[in-house]
Length: 109
Image 1 (cartoon, rainbow, N blue to C red):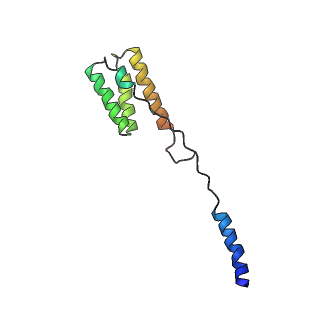
Image 2: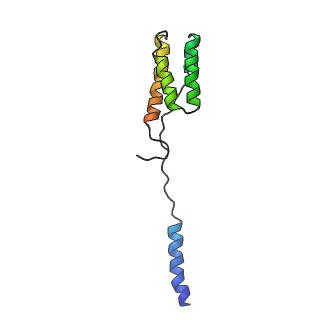
């Protein structure tokens, strides 16, 4: 009987502390990259420019952020781009730079 009186509070303590919900970290805001406007904006560009845009898109799809940024910067420096095309390329490059500056998912600051 004494053993039961000693074990009962121990079991109760374990049950109460073991059932506590652990707070999960909220979702980490990761900068998104919206490159959907890149190809339509460059539809009237030269084949070489389109090839650079395609290379940037492939790098983005493969999560090769440094490669994509290098391709986008090369593309932004193309003198044949119109101001509207250059704006779209620059916006995508800026989104990518924000993504690179953000901490990886699961890493708290």
